[in-house]
Length: 118
Image (cartoon, rainbow, N blue to C red; front, side, top):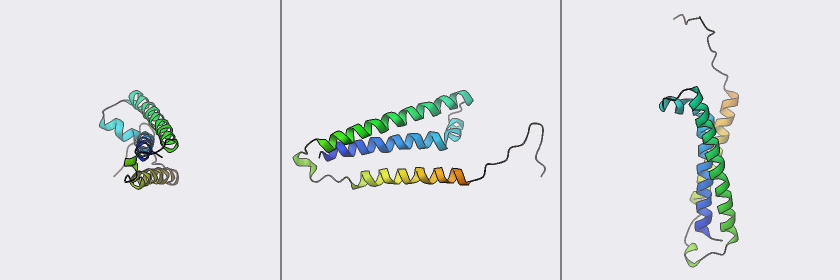
């Protein structure tokens, strides 16, 4: 097993999950920061899903290749635990945000023409 290759693949998978997580849960805030309209917000979301899928798929392929190849002499002292923990942490954060989005009631929006009384 080539640990350096496996670690690189795990990092790609982590970045792919982060891309999907950002465009899934924070696309509106990201569009506001970048001063984008609704059309460009949708394009940004699709681009984020594309990047997440591309990096995640690349990470899976690189990790599988690293697991199949024989290791070299420098692989013995490399540690995979930080990369695995980062991947598990990002997956846990994604699951937490998904559950939180399902359990939080939506904010009621005012119909057109109504105002808020204070």
